[in-house]
Image (cartoon, rainbow, N blue to C red; front, side, top):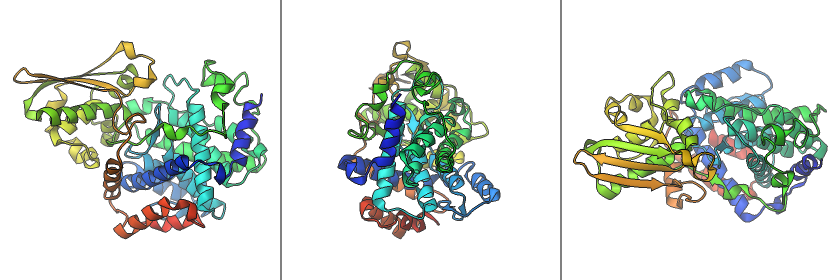
Length: 455
């Protein structure tokens, strides 16, 4: 059983010169995206209570709570920062369905402070290692309702922390093995619109650092956590994958950067195609909310189970809206666009939404069951009050790996993120942040970013 050792060596031995240019650029895009999503989410539902709680827990002042300021133990700073970065569900994701950067970037920043600093090259390298680790495990997992983020992202943050703490390959193996024992999480949180969605993102960041710190202290994990009788390939892969599916060309070829999703719209990836479809139809046929008699949407069974249920405002309006395709389509139709501001509670409670929601029907297409390559698709039929029928099928929404955002679209999203929030980062700091991240490999100490991320 050598796959565990293969990953351990990859984590401990990979150097900056091993990272291809395209991979480095992908990491920079992720860091920039997370800077924006953290700013935008810092004061949304549940974020202030989380910040208050990690401060109340106290402990060593090791790492910075972004935006809010203050220092707490590194693993708790990572928890709070990842929670904020995921708060609006606009952080990067990786097909199929795993949110990574909100946790890995948060863990990397906290671990860098814990370690006494690191260069931009070291930071970039650790994140490339972490994302590749998470992506590899994500590719050999059969989730059946497990949250991809809770299962695999924690392995990515563990790899990040082990690398930045400069652990040996043996310690890196134990770090992953311990993180394996912290993996978990359920999509029921998404379906029920619970703040736990964001907490799982925080757990993934926190768990990776804790696992690395324990391994550094000599606490070991199961050596056969991948191939063992109760290892990863059995428990999460359900015995459908071979070891080579996980480790082939590890260290020689990076794959994660070809599988990244940067969202066009501020909601679950499974709602993106529906939002695209209604906006395209509005543009092509000058359809308005007043024209519509009925909207029929067909999605994959995976998407239907996650976002196809009837919309209820509930106790956490933003989360419920983010994970509901009916709301996303109704909002885009009513407002003639999609923006963060339309996921604020006052907009969600707009009486004008309710009549449109009642006109929207969502059904699953059984033929798409298990076909992950099209699980983000949406087929839409709009019937107008005059009897006109318009159709639009979006198989790969904007921002998906097969349909990436243009530079202009990405910049538009980033500016939306940076101008949002109760206390937006000052414009001059935003410009400095962009410049620093774009030249990350030249930074002597990544901690110089932190003053730019506290308001």
